[in-house]
Every structure is written in structure tokens, then in C-alpha cells.
Image (cartoon, rainbow over all chains, first blue to last red; front, side, top):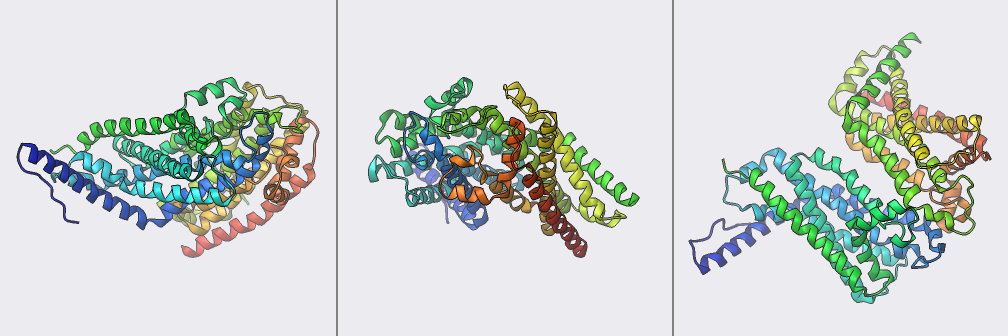
Length: 276
Length: 256
């Protein structure tokens, strides 16, 4: 893909030219990232299958939980379907982080520092592969959910909103993976953080609604844990219907993660792309 | 025999030394079971309110037995990762060249797995006791529970050893881990088997881990069930997997 690397001088025309160049650069890096991800099918399969295995097992094994008084649905899979989306997004974070870390370790990022490529283009573009993975995963999880009897209280429109939210969540975690890679610099270190992401998932309302969690400290942790709101936003579309608050919190926390991770990544990127 | 013990002792010492001095290896193997204990016993304690759920020592104890046995199994699995790493780094090839009695290598790795689990199992037990777990079993019954963990650890270590030696690459990690993980979670993890319904009930009934888990829970509750079956199942699995691990070693020897 031929990419224009620099725009003309100052002025409004130059500003629009700068934006065009930035988009071109971002797309070029995103294309490379997406192709790299799609070529590593083994890397795509495991992160996709593992949440589905847990969904299949826990969807049945925790079925008796629906007999707890006050449980919001009679089908535990309706409740659990949000989990694979968030869990898959966490795998996306690792894929994105490891890919970027590999570029740092291999010196690819240093070579890019010799070009006029802008840090923002590199940062967002690098997440292109993760975004592709997020989209594929979201569609697969949705289809598996529907095939196993999950029904949407919000109807067909709700299914599309769920897809949109889950892709945003995947992108948000991908930006977090990118930030970790820029801060830590090695794939091994990024992978080492993975268990911590899982801890945030399990210390949330992933298995029971927050109001039914008996242990007080656990309920408090789940309440302060943003992952609970990502899950509840997705889950609301399946169980409740159109719940504006749950959706606002779900979209809000995802967007906030994107903004914070990209802002912090930009600072780290300046160091990584130091034109020495 | 002396040469066998010499090799086994050296490999076991190296295995446990690497674990203890390397936080990247030690910390996850301790944190994972603790995290499962917290997530299951803490987050799911309301499950005990499901009608017909009956386990007198309480839900923390119910989940402790699962996490205790899981930590035993994962002590073996993590040791398998180390063996695979030894093959990737070339150390295992030098070990095969220098060991006067190669079967001692398998014994050494399994002893290493056991020592690793002693550490993890102790931490998990202390955490559960601090969290207020009730123990209704007597001393002999608790020794029985520990015995189940020891043999579970041996079974998992032999499985991991076999796979790692057959494949001789760190990429074998998923293959070592996944079957163990799936078998464990296809047992009645969250509720007694009588409360499960559908395919998961059928699978749990056939799953050999179910008997081990039920025996462990019975021993902790002071009302033993299926203890003989559990030990017989684990003994059978150990015998089969010892052959598997030995064949894995033979495959590694042939590969040179």
C-alpha cells in the first residue's frame, strides 16, 4: 500500500492534508496488523475457543443458580452470555500487546522512528489486527449464544447494539494491551499481566448479579470494578431489554478506557519513537 | 537403584529450586488457586442457598476441596511447562546425555511437582482457614484428603511429563493444560452432582474426577464417600500415565 508520509506547509489546506496523511498512515499500519493477525490462525482460535468452553461448562454447571430467589432469569446462559465477550476482549488485549511488543523487541519500531510516520497513526493502526479479532469473536459468540438458546429481551436491534458494545470493549482492551506493550517492552511481560486481567473478570458480577453476591467485601469489589458494568451493559440487552443506565455505563466505561489508554500510550510512544 | 535416586534427587532439586527462586514461576502457581478460592468461595457463596444444596461444613469448605485438588493437579501441569522449557532451551538434551539412569528424570520431575504443590497447597489451606472454613473431618480423614491431593498431583505430573517429552516444545503448554482444566471443570465444581441437570450431569457422572472430588468433600465433612473408588481411579490413572511418561521419555531419547 503506497502511503503519503508528509503534507504541505501551514494553512487550512495543509491541516486537511495532515488529517488525510494521518488517516492514510493509520490505515497502512492497520492493514499490516490485520494481515498479521489473520495469518496467525492458531492465535485466533485459542482465544476464541477458550471462552466458549467456559461458557458451555459454566452455562450448565451453574444452572442451579437460577433457583436462587431473585435471580433475574430462568436460563443461566442468558446471564452468562456476556462473559465470553469480555473474556474474549481480554485475550484481544494480550494479542494486541504481544504483537506490539514483538515490534518493539524486533526493532521494527526503531526503524519506523526513521520515517515521518506519526505516533498516533502507529498506535491506532497497530490495534487494527486486534479490532479484526474483536469483530470476528463478537460475531462467533453471538451466533453460539443464539444457537444455544440465548434470547434477546431487546430484540434484533439489541443484538446489533450488543455487537457494537462488544467490539468497543474489545478495542478498549486492545488499547490497554498496546499501553502495556509500550510500557513493558516485551511480549513475556505483557503475557505475565494476563492473569491480572482475569482476576478483574472473576472479581466482578460475572457469575452472579451484584445484589445476589452474599460476601460483602466481594460485592463491594464487584461494585467498584468497571468490568462489572461492561458485563451488565451487555447482559441488559439479553435479560432486561433496553436499559439506558446499564448501556450508558457499559459504553461509558469502555470509551473511558479507550481514551485513557490511548492518552497514556501516546506519552509512552513518544519515548519509544524518539527520533535520535 | 542408587543411580536412579541420584538422578531423581538432582532433577527434583533443580525443579523446586527454579520454582522458588523465579517469581515469574512461583507467583502465578500460588496466586491462581488463591484467586479461584476467592472467586468461587467468596463470589458464589450464595449458591449454598439453592434448594437441596446440603454440605454441612459450608460453601467455603465445599469449594476449598475443589481448589485444593485443582492446585494439586496444576502443580503437575506447571511442572510440565518447566520440562517443555528445558527441551526448548536444550537443557533436557544435556540431561539425557548425562543421566546414568534416565527413568530417574521422570521421578525427579514428579517429586519436583509434589514439592511445588506442598507449597501451594499449604498456602491455599491457610487462606481457607483464615476465611473461616469449617473442618468436620478427623485427623485420619484429613490425611486421606491430603493423600488424594498427592496422587492427583502425581497423575497430573505424569501426564504433563509425557506430553512435554513427546512434543519437546513450550508450545505444548496448551495441550498439557487444557485436558486437565476441562476434566476438572466437568466435575461437580459449584454444586453437588445431584443438583446438576442435562448433559453436564451425564458427563460429570462419567468423569473420574467426580469421584475424587466427592471423596475429598466427604472426608472434609467427616462423612467419607467413594474414598476407595477415588483412590482406585487415581491409582489406575497413575499406572497408565507412568507408562505414557516412560514412552515420552523413550521418544525424547530417540530424538536425541
